[in-house]
Length: 201
Length: 201
Image 1 (cartoon, each protein chain N blue to C red):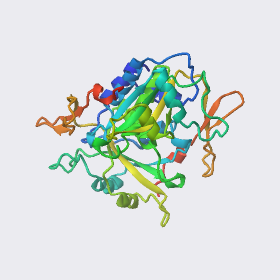
Image 2 (cartoon, rainbow over the protein chains, first blue to last red; image 1 turned 45 degrees about the horizontal axis):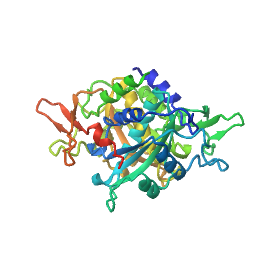
Image 3 (spheres, rainbow over the protein chains, first blue to last red; image 1 turned 120 degrees about the vertical axis):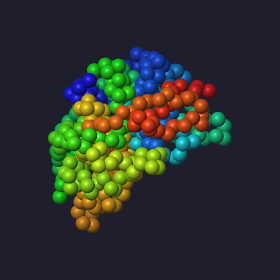
């Protein structure tokens, strides 16, 4: 794989929040995605992250109401029936190895989402969810032993929406909020490269 | 690019700490690497991370002494002259957008390190460094305006060491510390896939 292939993959790999709910994601696919995280860099090489995989109809129905979607869309409560995620990958910290994981969480989520895109899947990394309830409904822990703490929920499935990158101006007060147009397309403004690089003074 | 190509890239993409110091990394290559971060997912789409690129001999000499290397190697202070990094990418948080970046840091560092590998580069994500001194020597901020805070230093260059993944046992007290053998090879134990997936109770 060369640099250009990888860059194209990263540009194409957009967050999606609406899915083809009639097309299931196999449990084995989730396992393959988690396998990508195995060799990611890890702070102190402790490798403290674990994954709870959710594919059953029953569990999905318990997980979905605990998630908050697209904070900027005040009049949208998340995907409606028919376009909901068909699987969840719940990233948990094994607190036996400490109370933080440095940047392991993002390193691994990038690996997983890139892997998803190569398989035609899409998804959304969600931080706004009810941690206590999620731990409870997924029975992450033995009673009185709160070892595994969910950090991110990756909602996924086969995409049923179009997402388009928009060029942001480099002005300091440029609006970075994503938005949706009447044609249903989700637009994501991204900063210009020049803004990402700090000057040599 | 298919899933297997991506998986192979991730397996091959090992952290390295010793470099061919005689082979420079062009500034333009660092810019291409930062460009990969532009389209990464971002919490609230705020995109608060910025990069300071270091390639000059003078600045590299100032950055190197501020870094701590390979915490498990008590008798190794880091790469010696001749095998030091030939560039640094300093990831900074623009605190104008808040005091944290969720997992944007890791998402972007994974993108950059994968890109590095496609170009034959290697590196090490470093969290243990003198934040105040680094900010000072790189003049990250205007006087009295501490806006940009360095979060990670990615030391990079063309690799001059071999790194090998070792299979860890799934036992709870298995040793996860990396180690170096007399032949100079750096060994990194990685947990078995089975350990990464939490059971359904």
